[in-house]
Amino acid sequence: MKTRSQHLKKLAVNSFFSSLSELSMGLLFLLFIIAARILGDTQFGVFSFALAYVSIFGIISDCGLRYLYITMVSRDPSLKSKYFENILSLQIFLSLICFAFIYISINLFEKTDEAKTVVYFLAGAEVIRSLKFFFRFVFRTSERFKLESLTVSLERLALLIVGATLLSLGFGVVSLAATFLFVRIVDFFITLLFVKTILPLRLGFDLSFWPTLLKQGMPFALTGLVMLILLRIDTVMISLIKNDTEVGWYNAGYKLIEAAAFFPAILVNSLLPSISSLHGKTAEISMLYQRAMRYILLIAIPLSIIAFILAEPIIIFVFGSEYHQTVIVFKILLLSLSFTFIYHVGSTVLSGIGQQKMALYIACAVLLLNIILNAALIPNKGYVGAAIATMVSEFVFCLLYGGFLFSLGYKISWFKLALKPLIATSTISFLILLFPAHLGVTIFFAILGYFGMMTLLSYWDEEEILFIKKISSSLKEYF
Image 1 (cartoon, helix red, strand yellow):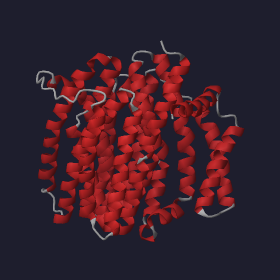
Image 2 (cartoon, one colour):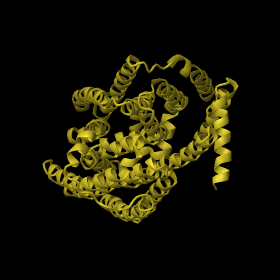
Image 3 (tube, helix red, strand yellow):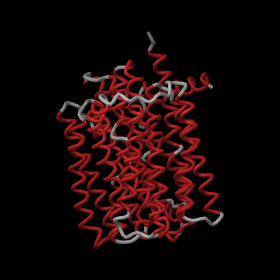
Image 4 (cartoon, rainbow, N blue to C red):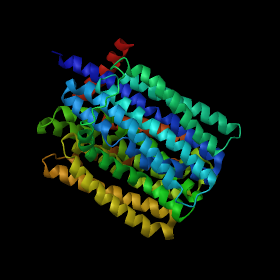
């Protein structure tokens, strides 16, 4: 039997490599910055529209199967081979259907041939990405976080190098889209070699089992579909109602918010298998939920408030003066950043405790609200209206998720968790306004000052101090 020290050591190492996987999103973010600067707002808008459009259909190739795999195998490891073989076969079949849907549907809209070509390339890249994502969940379930980190980081590094090179040589948006397809094809076959070290690469054709898989995965799939539409419908509606230039302005600000979402993603990656393995143990799950929200607020509060103050210099520095219209969108989306972080955790907890249907009902209600708000606001306010719709929708998400979890007995001491981060953030914000400086200098001292103040406020408990020490010692031993 493993000791508490051994569990903590494993958690430290796994958390480190999980963090690396999410931090490698910074490579994609850098590619998007380069693309936005070189392509300009209109062409970047075309790329952003295509990316959003294909991602909405991407759920067809997954159907919630990867979440089903990690949930079922975490509870009963003996199911690993059966679920892996049949899910892999089923996903390949569904991927072909997904590509066909995208190809047919995009031709129903009055889009340029260039925009359609970008969609075709990104559609192929999306179905490959979906299969790769399933393999990532296989790595996580087997606690092979190092393999996940390696394959994900290499893929994103290749996308950055090839994409940035082509853009700098004068190739346009179509070449950038083609890069995503060809890099992901190569990465897919490399990832297969690593998967072979965990499980035999066999396809399963237990056709009588496939309906069961689809039925079990449907709550995950529908929730995922609704969440994807929520994330991307604004971009699609701006493109169809307004134009691709406004899509470019909107997505420049939105990409910054997505980049910040790596932190809740790290928590969610480790939270779902942990909660699934504690199925029925309310006290233990409540403790994990409380701890996750503690870390969410620790980061979300200063990030949203300080970035709001520095919004204009951040946008100009990252994207250039051509994207000055993005500042207002960025500020509005920052107001909803804390809500975004919180509902990610709430959704994960609901899925982990077997409340996928309730998570779906909540997501559907918010999606309906979001579409109504977008339809009402975009015609008159354009991309700014879409940002307002997003802010309101994510606030409602938090209320509904938090309220339902509260009714189940999963309570959060919000005031206690938020008080010290608010005190520290308010102090740092006041100093930023009082002593304006270069953006880089300001951010450096803001981070240093914030965590210094949190230490002075005695924020860190004994378990966290022990955990930090364990991370340091465990990683030294590991390497």
